[in-house]
Image (cartoon, rainbow, N blue to C red; front, side, top):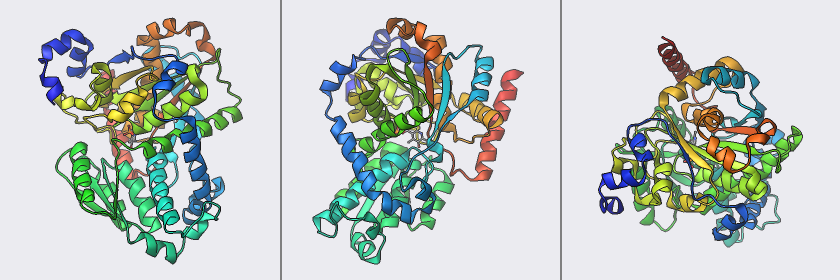
Length: 453
Ligand SMILES: *Cc1c(COP(=O)(O)O)cnc(C)c1O
């Protein structure tokens, strides 16, 4: 990238010493020097609470339709939401293995078990498709916002939507969400898949009448090609993972849902009861949207950390250098090769990076070996199966205590930690085929045994 070439890499390393460790693929923990008090930070942002509420109301309007076409959502009345669960045995295991107490509660947010597409993308991805469908139907006066949206489950609407197409570039999970939802409504949908996308995801999409185009290159290339093809077709809507405000807002709705779940568990979040949230980060929309929603709700009482693979620390690099999407991990010689689906992203969203800059507490990296180790451990201790990327948040609490003490001191948190809550965001896994999950577990077992030798 041009910007990066203007200075030689040594100059960058002198300015940001952490870059040395990042390039050596060591795990790092970075505190964001640009975090601001919520009240000042929020004023700089292009999105507001009204935008998030608007997204939440739209999802409520679609709930009768979702309940009808995806029967697994009936017990939630068509609201696509995941459980928040206590993981005390995993907590104990982390404390032993990492030789570090975790003061406060440790909870897992199971977006791995979101209905329809089994990952965090069932928030943003599905929301964006629904919003586009609603816009088209309203424009053509086929629908009013007072209607019962279950009428969308009809040949009339499917025929209407079949005149339009939707396209997206994806490493896998976004493709699943956009593909499944779009096909269900009746759209023609094309998913442009990067080389690292798993075969079972492509097979699943094809079985649902989704067109899958495969690329030899990484995620950025798949997005670029998808965008070019969509640009040439006025009836085609391109879901732009790198810049989409709609995706971001769909994710942000998670916050008010989480608030209800915390209330049900009788967990208070306030000045004396801080909340720490650990979010796996790819291009940034998912974790960024959720962090944004949580900051609107809990302001300075919530502390959000992003987690990235050591081989794909794109958001950390973009935030640290202030270059955002003008720099890729490849520019500094990092290969962007990781087993963490959804996190194998070389270049972050510039839009998300700038929005999150005044709100984010920090960012850390985690090795693939560590992901596999924790994957196995979570199965053994809690019987919960996640995909490797979804475990990036799991090491957050011990990392915070081991390497983030400056943060706790600076924000007057040390005394409050025994009353704190840590939420690890488990971003995917329930749709992974059993034989693939067994391989993941075996890999975790192997890594664990090697480490113990
Ligand atoms: C996409 C994804 C993420 C990260 O979301 P981004 O919006 O790309 O940052 C995390 N975990 C899983 C399993 C994902 O599929």
